[in-house]
Image (cartoon, rainbow, N blue to C red; front, side, top):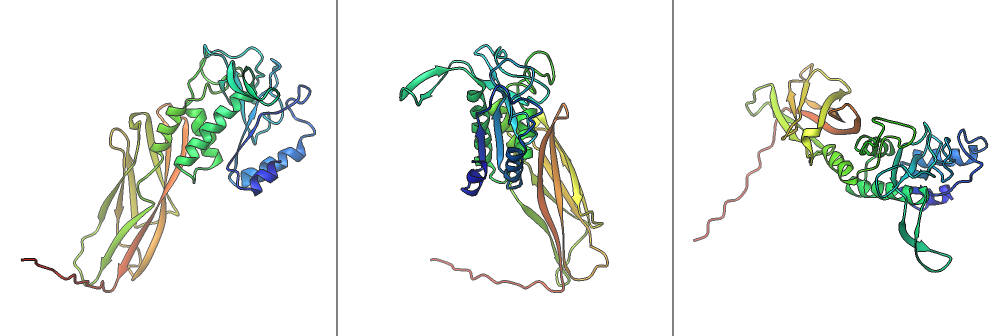
Length: 294
C-alpha cells in the first residue's frame, strides 16, 4: 500500500492502523519499514497513530523512526488515557469525540482514538506542503515539533511528546523560512565604472519574525562573498560581493543556506538562495525607443 501510494503521487501518507500485540521495538516489521524508507527517499511524509491501549510502548508502525508518531488528547488538552505513549511518541492532537464518517452505518458518528489524531497532523503537513511544495519531510517534522504547544509536564515527555500540534504556529514558522527570491547576485563589466565591494539585501518573509532567528552558511565557501542576517521585525540577509580571484571574466556562483530556529533553539529547517557574481569584459547597451504623444 505504501509503495502504491508513492507510485501514484502521494505526498503525505497517514497510517491510522496497528495491532495491540505489535508495539515497540516493532520486531518483524522490516518489510513495512523498508517501504516507509522508500517513501521518505521520495520526500513523502508519513504520519502514524500511536495506538489505543494505554500502553507504555508506542504501536507499530508509529514507533518506527520513519513515521511521525501521534497520540491523542481530549477536549481539555489532556492526554487521552487510552493513548499509547513512550519515548517514540512525537506529538499529540485531538482524538476524543471526533465527529467523522462511519463506513458501517453509512452515516456520521463520534469516535475516540489516535486514528483520528494522526489525520490532524497529516492535514497540517498537507497544508504546509501546499504553501511550500519543496519542503522536505525532515522540515515538516521538526517544524511541527518546534511549534507545538507544550503540555504538562514541561518539555518533551513520553506522554505528550513535544506537545499538541499548533497549525497557526507551524505555518507562521514556515513563512519565516521563505525568501521572496530563489537567486540573486552581482554584475560588473569593464566598460562600465563600478566600485567594489557591492552590497545587496534580501528580505525574509515572516509572519512571526520576533520568534525566529537565522544563521547563514556559504556552501561552498568562497572568498568573494560575505553574508550576514538580521532577525526581528524586518528580517533580511545582507550579501557583500567582492571581485572573485583571480579576477578573470566569467560567472561565479555559490549558495547561501539559511537555517531558522526558534528563540529557544528549536530548529525550524533550512532554505537556500543561489548567489552569482558575473564579471563581463563588456556589457551590451540596450536602447529603448521613446514615444512622445501629443
